[in-house]
Image 1 (cartoon, rainbow, N blue to C red):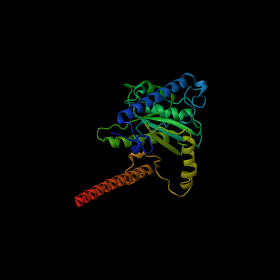
Image 2 (image 1 turned 30 degrees about the horizontal axis):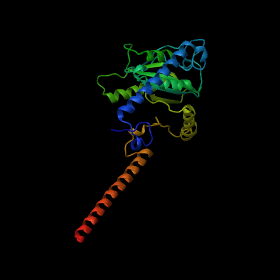
Image 3 (image 1 turned 135 degrees about the vertical axis):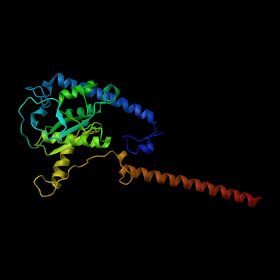
Image 4 (image 1 turned 90 degrees about the vertical axis):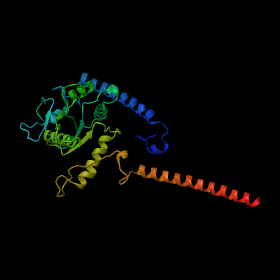
Length: 291
């Protein structure tokens, strides 16, 4: 059995078994997550070396400096801020919030499951001053919290979103978690006009991630939907969808190439079989006539 994962044209040219690829990928995750945990621990132990991430005055993340918690939340607001801010909020109008929605279940980096740590490592190590990074925990309690989750709780603003309800199915609960996370960030950072919501396995794969996102917002989104314009802005924009989840009704270029290459190969293969069959039949007829 073969598979394609994170490799262009892997469906055609992948030669490793599923188990081999899975083990290699798991070992890669474990190593990357170990590096992420060690880096976050170093930030917490030596905050003076990271003044862009940790305030020397409050020993909290600098992202708390722009957080404005409302005194009275509406009845529909089912979120809470895990750690209260220790400073008077600053006002800035051009921040963009990036928030990661995750669950504490199965989040041990020793097992290669601390995906949120991988994302934070990428986002914080190359942090751009225009961005605020926050976290949203979905349906979590203080029971069985992994070491990695404890670390990131100490480092960043964390909103606990509660979408658990026996009357809702799993998809509706997931939708409610997204909604509460978006609501928590926009209400807590009222001067932010844009929010990028990431799932805990959506790891940025480019060191130029921030500049690419800024280019998308400044040069495309703001051009089409200016904040002070008459055109109605979209509620949300889905920036990326994994190609292995794209259906054949909306195929990616890689799927099109794979389909074309596969059809070409099968055409040549069956043509060769037909040619071989015709040749054998011709030889058989010739032998009969000669006899």
